[in-house]
Image 1 (cartoon, one colour):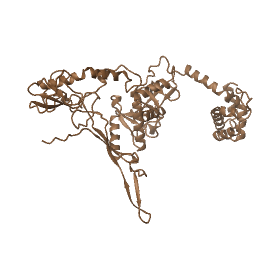
Image 2: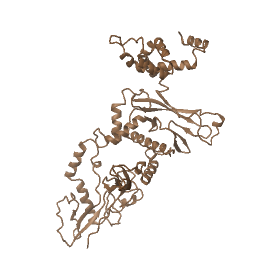
Image 3: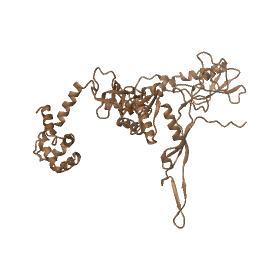
Image 4: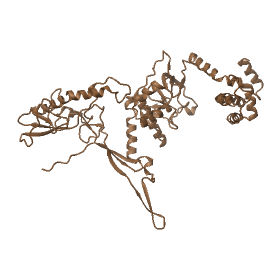
Length: 509
């Protein structure tokens, strides 16, 4: 029977093939193929696997009756009529998928629409007139899924013709600000201009970084090798399947911020313009500041591991003792070379923050305010130049180069696949160092710190030498001293603070 003939028949008997009946039949065809293996298992071992059984197992009949909202007798009747269709559903689905690949390319395998058909701006009058969002454009994109690999998608954007608000899959844009939608966390998260990731994949990356200590780059590598799948995109698709560590990091950040705002019934608002790397910086700072001030909600807990309750003679509680321990964990994050400066560096290779960047032109010797010579980090003073010379010679020593090369042979820590890395990037500049100089002969310099010496063969100055002078130099950036944490015996971190520096006690004169 042709489709047209069936529709004519349905129109002739509206009391039989009505909307409710068609919905129940379609539900039966949707659910029953999922239980094919269960149906076959209940048959005799001699029953051919290629033939549909004559009857359904009782357990499957009851389940389908509940799922499709029909009685058990009607369920068995539907099976008697549709069993051949159900049994060949898997093969038919493969054919449909192949035909979609052939004919549905221009629509993409997934079209990512905004979740609204009407403008949500309270100041816009178009919704009151019953006018839906009609002005659209689309762009190609890439969707990273957990079970289907990398898929091509079309990302649809709505533009309100009244207030000019733009609506994307995860957020709307108005006056240069990006407003993420309130409500439940989206199943698909946009992590780049043309890159989208399933939430399940982002959760997998969060688990990998927390439990396996994977870097974002290695998370991307793992996905590309294990889950992306072969021939995932059309040959002429504009954007390729390459996944970067930045996409993983942005997915981690966006999902965490969205969950935080949804929990507090607030809206995540970030700039829509500017660099992607800077887009969520202020939102992250605001969240960290709030957690630092108020802590997690679990902070107020009192469990048996961190609280002791003492009873009186009558057996009733008379007092409780709650314990917390404060200790420092040395992590050594890079920071500005100025003592106790808390302004973050622009990049991890910078020596000073933006506020103190001008100090790069001042001599690296402590308490010296003379300008540096061109191409140097010290001033015109001979002993200061000699200190820098010793510092540079130490970095170029054979022993140090051997150590650098040894470290270069292993995989780069950020990437599980070994890379050619510049030797100079593998070892950071030292922090503040001390040197002994002879005021009568500035060419005699000896380092005080372990492993710092005059590599040209100069001997340390004799103890008690009247001409010996000790000076300090800061050629590289500093590192934070430690992360001070207040932790309960049960392991709950109650508070945290970064200690940027320490002051040494002055020796007695």
